[in-house]
Amino acid sequence: MTTPVSFADLALIPSLRPGLDALDYTALTPIQAQALPAILDGRDLIAQAPTGSGKTAAFGLGLLQGIDAGVVQTQALVLCPTRELADQVGKNLRKLATGIANLKLSVLCGGIPLGPQLASLAHAPHVVVGTPGRVLELVQKDALDLRNVRTLVLDEADRMLDMGFDEAIRALVKRTPKERQTLLFSATFPESIRTLGKAMLRDPLEVSVDGGAQPATIETHFFEAEPARRAPQLAALLLQFRPESTVVFCNMRRDTEEVVGSLAHYGFNALALHGDMEQRDRDEVLLRFANRSCNVLVASDVAARGLDIDDIGAVVNYELPTDVDTYQHRIGRTGRAGKAGLALSLVSAQERGRAALVEERQGSSIRYEKIAPLAGKPREVPQATMTTLRIDAGRTDKLRPGDIVGALTGDAGVSKDAIGKIDVFPTRSYVAIARNKAKHALEQLRAGKIKGRKFRVNPL
Image (cartoon, rainbow, N blue to C red; front, side, top):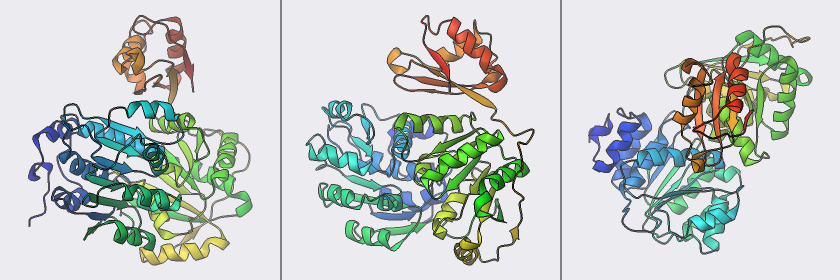
């Protein structure tokens, strides 16, 4: 059978076309070309695919194709390791489902009150996206019925196992019909994933993309690390290479806050992202990094799984991870969407064993460079180009992005060119403003009105 190259080559139902058009999806990515024909044929699938490969559209189109929106039952379940990833998947599926009338999709994750989720399940959603713990809790309370699930998706299954969701996943699988279709996506393929696949899937097709050497668009550098002076070495790297946006990966979540404190001392716009943060704080950190109000994000591996940004200028390994698959996944976050990427790694003498595994994977020797730790506070530290303003109003107040733009460009007198990304949530909204215009925009919004009403506005 000929491998499809575009979405037009697939036997998709007409109601999926508006979503593809709205997202401007035409050509298939490698994972979509390999996986979608089998998914649409109803086959089980094990796919090795990193974030940014187009896997959400692959399983999303497959599960939406099988939804009967006229039947009020939960027909598809997508399990994700983190709230951030579940939110991202939910948003993407809603866009793909634009042309499906009356489709209900619920995102059900821990870390937020249970009450509203219980109330939202009074009428069963057709599609559920969530974290295993919270979904299982709702099933055990008889608030969610999985007996009619036709498609089960395990997204980033390796991280779900790393986070201890094995038992919850198995308990949920037992609540679904045996004749369901199961799709397992994982960035890495450890033995635990193969064991899980054998237990839960029926004669699955196995596909893999970007599972080998790093993409040629990523320039890599390895530096000799001085363990006691890693933070000033990191600052020196950021000053030397001056990437527009950087994700710094730490192995331990406690290190993220310490590194942010050190970078702030040198004058960098840095924020931490880790699993101990409150959900609202995590959402705002991701939002500020995405809208260019922060140019250095210091993250743990699990927390960064919800990060879906195509133009990350550089990835820094503050220290090498303990396995080479995680290294590959980290650096794969730069050099995407056709842009060149940069990966910098600080490697101490104690980490040379880990580096040897990287050498073996990439098939070439590592050449170590030296980087002198930064001494004193530097001049001309790269700054974020934008500042985020938070408006304490959102969709429940009938607020739309156009209303915010109108308020800024009207009486506030802010140029459209100074307005960046706008995000509107149920009870709050965020707008990125060019840093040199942010103070004026804040003053004018506080003094004026948005859509004829006054709302509290604060900088982040």
